Image (cartoon, rainbow, N blue to C red):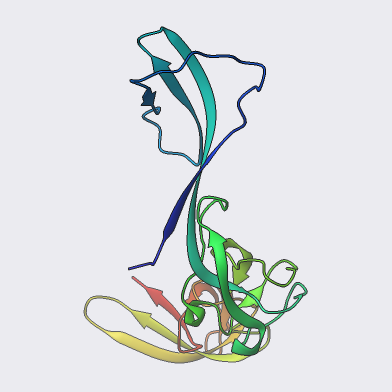
Length: 185
């Protein structure tokens, strides 16, 4: 479980307002769960209503860049550190475990202290064009393995074109974690 520190930031209220003191103030937040919202502040007696901007923060210890990093950098533990990041400030993908980052390729440049987000990462190229790969054809009853030549390059999970070494036929296969390619029927 994450160690999260929550913070509510109340927007500025116009200093020219001169509202009477309220002994029974009521605050209503909209049902939407978002980082930016408007709170309705009301006082039944004396009667007044005020709308106030509110920003929520959820501070967590996340993986951040230890130094300025350029695009296409293969990330290692030396380039990573932990730092405070607002979970609500990103569009998702905040990473808290450095093991999820190491060995991946950074798509964009980052400045030191910037959080590393899942959408900013790519897996390294696992198969290169011209590389000999093990092609595994699998169905529910049998498995056939043969050698093929990669006609494209790609990452684990990508679908690439390969050429069967024996038949010279081209096939579309998915790159497996072991560096081979597979076709499932």
